[in-house]
Length: 170
Image (cartoon, rainbow, N blue to C red):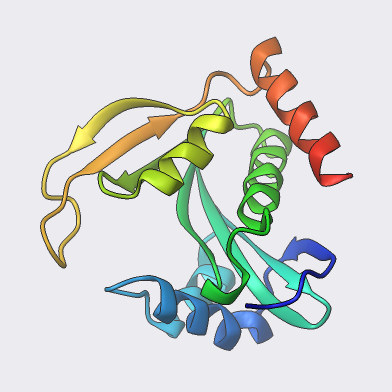
């Protein structure tokens, strides 16, 4: 288990890709290849990616694609040694603030039906299940639950984000 350290969330850079890919590899059965992250950073004008750093070490990452007025969470993970230290909460707060800044009205994502821990985190940020994608995950055919937030400007959503800012000390 890693020691607790102050974590800062910043924009992902090309030189972060190796560390991000290692977390991806440790976290997912079918990880994105490193070149996919490089391509996203270099040429996808709809994409925004962030990393969580504890000192110089990258301990988590997340990304969104801006799709019309919706920020779609494309990827999200915390290094296994750094989980259960609120890093995922910090990443999700940062994504919500980033999404609002670039004009998104809401956040949307897919999550494995079996990933109850992630679903609980998303629900704590105001996400609700709004659909299901049957057989979404190609590695085992598991269904994905589609979750989305209320409008980011809705007073209830603003209260959730304010509470998370206070919790994280930002």
